[in-house]
Picture 1 (cartoon, rainbow, N blue to C red):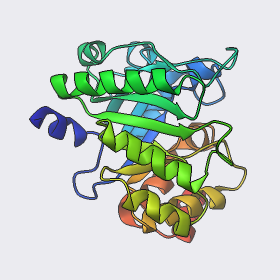
Picture 2: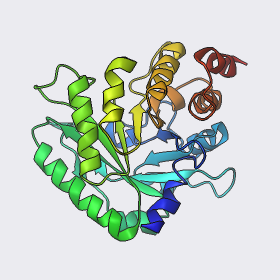
Picture 3: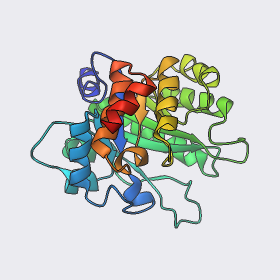
Length: 264
């Protein structure tokens, strides 16, 4: 398992044990939205801002590798679906752990929608990927979302808590979940999960303070970082936004400090 530990240090800061990940897998799901039209430029911005890793499909190393600038971790996303599908929640595997090794990835990620019609197939795929990650020594990040009629919302506290625990039970090294809306409801998510829990940035917010408050609250009850995509690469000043997020995560900056960093 030494390989996993070494590679995890390219994703998690070895001192803070936290991470800032910039997901850029949206090109498959919803297309080349503003901020990720040019993947190489966005990888540069993420690295300059101090993010620990970027995350995306095979196109990221194929078309986003820079050959210069600051180093940054690479997580290859193995799951896919599009908004045009009759069931966008039905994620299927579109790549392999072996291919991730060939392309120099520091880790892989899978997406599971708990409560979806094909939950069973996604859990099976998750388990198979986890076994391969042990074999190859690659860290596994599980994106676990509650998307089904049995949940009140995608931030349902009981659902998110269960989803996070599933990730740990099936062999993930890091789990990404939605924030549940308050420190009181999110603390049990972290307490019930023995692996690092990072929160999703979610849809683009008009108010940066709202994003910073969510991050600060999650960190204060034990979250291990964030995976912020649209609120980072979709911002008018992506480098400054990522720097502000990194200050919250790695320097325990306040919300006001983060706002000042963003607007300086």
